[in-house]
Length: 453
Image (tube, rainbow, N blue to C red):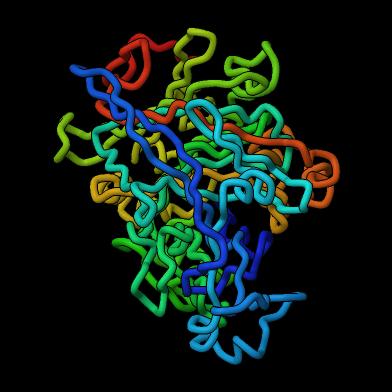
């Protein structure tokens, strides 16, 4: 995801420094059922929960009810400096009614619905799957597959329903830097964009970690993207290591911020994904998204060699579209060869290979990653990197610049929030397990029986 680092600032900056655990509202995380699957035993239910990220929560003085952040500024009484702020401010719990009414997080049968906006004015949300109330669940997906049902039919240009993995600390960095809140309160976020740290005033500092984007989509465009980093777990950065600056510094940091994206529209298949029966995958209806992480030798100790995507809709199994870009033709999965060819064809810096490519990503998948489910909009680029022409200063005819059919005129958050406030995304039937075990066709390695277009 290109610019998720801005999401916290767009939503609620009041969560940025709080590290104490609130006691005013009892945390009541909505349940979600997972399924762990094997070829021999089928799928077995696992009970888990979802927790709201700390950035969306009420932050107040410990032992009181005064806001630590108000009217665009930190309360000097509690936050004369970042150390005092961490000790004086608490991030508060959210009860069942609060999840639904304040944040638009509605548990549904076999999954969850995330409303884009609520009547109270909240915009977007980001949640993590937990294993017990005090720890995030770690998914270890090397030589495994991950499947979920998604519905992005109401998400228009400029919006994004994102399901992705990040190498967050399992406990939400509880016990570090005066953080007494931890995973129970949704702390410890990091990703490959190296977002500014939640408890540091200096905007030149951040926190980086490996990211694997499973599904970033609205009803016009979709992408899935590995973002390897030269990090193990959440890693603090400063200056050039964060990749914040201009003049090429983006490609000098710890993480591959661009990633190696597979976007069917960008790769030339303009009729593959979109709303209506004229598209191979109809985004106006729910669909099942399967992602397989194959190793070079088919074992759990092998190196990640290929990431395969397949869709299931209306009982039909459809492989991802083949690229029609010159010198990248025929590719429908993510391999190091695809990434190298794509970067060369589009004239992009190959930071993916510089950060270890799929081998590096596979090592992280083996260590374990946290699943995030979200919905958001984008003040910085208006989501053009996903569904329109990006960068703006490039001609749309240049290979790789056009990412989707949106023209950008209806993608600004102000427009989106005014015209699409009732939009939502659903995530259901989350399954993970052995290759070929999570969906009914029992398709095995390389999906020989799937239909590719």
